[in-house]
Length: 539
Image (cartoon, rainbow, N blue to C red; front, side):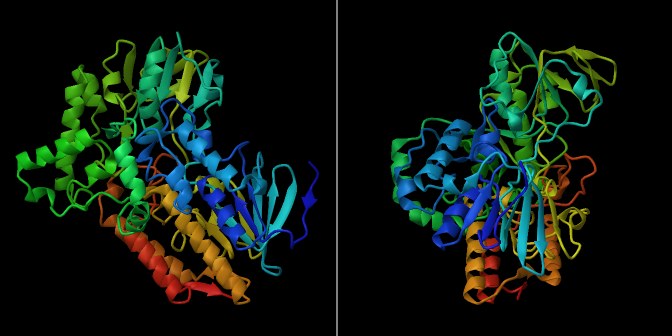
């Protein structure tokens, strides 16, 4: 495609990404009379729910919570069929929202952004696409997502494998039939845990190559109870407000008032048993108020889940390999599953420990481990995760005419103010950026919060004749320090998680999300605005 330039007045805001956050940004900014366009790499909207089509893909937040709150008619009318939404159902919902609010007319699909550059003389962002199109606007919103850059392992010979290769984050739309095939799944994070039980039911034999065992809890998914749905919808307005006064942005879970050590052993076990039977991660982490703060308290919960694994998996060697022993429960994102541990009791499933015996290379027919043992497979599913939180933005050459570049700025780890803006990059807003609670909260609520913040800031600037906004370096430094101090006061840094970038070789080990809780975070944002956008330079 030949280069195309639009008149600088054609757009007010450029949005990169048409997932949950990008679509809401279209709706919100359109209400302000702004001219916007969203650019999306996929040939459909939905973000993570567009790309992640692997078997068993399901949300780990209950359906009645994981939805937009900006339109009450929408949330009253939409009917979720199950307690936890499946990928197809959530994508259907997102497309329904896009159609209902006529959002697609401001989305340009199948367009990947190559560069984004800010010009301080004109106060304009100019993006260029891989097709050669150039577009400018005063404001740029990065709705690029936190888990949108799939990662393949850096292992010799990966291109030599002649069988079928899939990544859970790039799953074919038409699906995959593994019937009669010998399959290897590499990775036991969330996508691996969710897909393994279903792949096992199809495959002739399934080899699961596990480097790190992760904690998984039963989802207890079921058809949504009509009475629960009715009551929830009746209370929707109050529940949405209440969510902002919680740690994870999800209402309906009474905060614990007791430390784990304050309960007798029998009482504690009964509490964990009740949480296990209930299903879900928020309820379990709310068993006691110090589970993510005190290692001894956490050990009581971790030991309980390890006991459940050993009681479920019949082979004691396999059971022990599946017991996480290198991180406290909850310090990696807790996984919800349906029959994950039970799957290892099947005759056609073999767990392969690649921590003690790593994969050395791929071959034309499979893969070979360090000790020389070989596994021939017909297909490999890479459940190897993402370059989380920063990968999608670093894939774009984001720079300014003052010599700033986001790759250089974040070389030693991401830096931001409130996870919303970055010093040195004026008029660029991030949706659920690093150092915000995004991935540690109900993501749709987090997207709405950040879009509202950006939209209100833009409205404030336009009303007051201002053309440029960016964080002060001192405010950004203070927020980064605060983010790290909060993380260090918890058990989170004890885990080599994607929260720390530990799944990407060479990526700096910096704890990226804000774990001080949604309530503390939104209070801080409100104070910043009330104090005239304190910490921001407006000109």
